[in-house]
Length: 364
Image: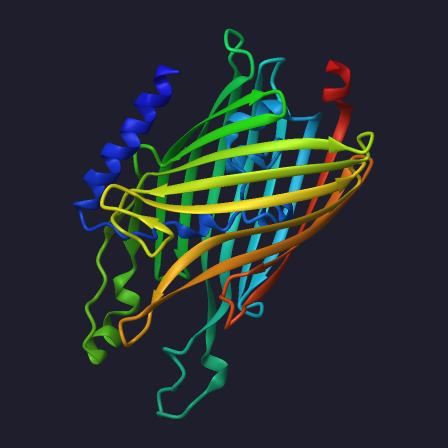
């Protein structure tokens, strides 16, 4: 377990070191949305819970719990009345009896943004045919590896190597690289998970095509953008989950809770200090014979300040259902990215299917 303490120390030290560099708090924040409608219907309480192909996103160490020889997951969601699109796909397969490999792709984009720089023709008249369109898109490619530790029963470790690519049409683009480290421990019906995000910091190197906007920026008095380096600060997630089978195993209950730690100063979350800010979330899943599922969760508790200086708290409720038929699972989640007074609900759909034999049944 020594490596866990070393990795956590790296997260703490790097978090405070990078915080002194005026780094943005929300760099690569599109990776905080999540993966899979099952997870989003439970307030993303997956650090200890994920045990399928989506574990490559939530906790790569849990990939060793993969049920089948091959698993594939696809997800699509639309935010802000369809303005932004979020897509996720992943594939996982065991390499041998102890290790598993997964590949995940994430895309978050606003497409068909009008470029009106050439709206006026040479005669000063408006010509709508001159309007062009571009996309502002964020991509992440995750390569995950997990391995069981035979000397410690129930313990698995894992890592993500991730490549980030961000584009703003042909105006600017960035490439970034980072590492995650994770562990999961299973003890009967209990599960514990630890996910260390961006343990060495994820660096995005931005390249700006300044010639395309120089004239407009000069006329409007704006600063012409220059090539920059953006750092994603380390974060950590700690999770616990417990399952029960009731009424001759016909019904199941699965409860989970996560604590998400950031080390870039105080945030408007439930628990905050100079050392770390902690954002808790809880989730619940009830199933009937592992065929039909109902889910709910609460998280993202925020403390909002009014103009008069007073504060109030908001939270994000999530709901979901799922169905499983053989090797195919279909899940749906209704998530609220607003608050209780200004709800901004989004519908999330995901599909998961497996190929080849059920490894869990073979091991029983």
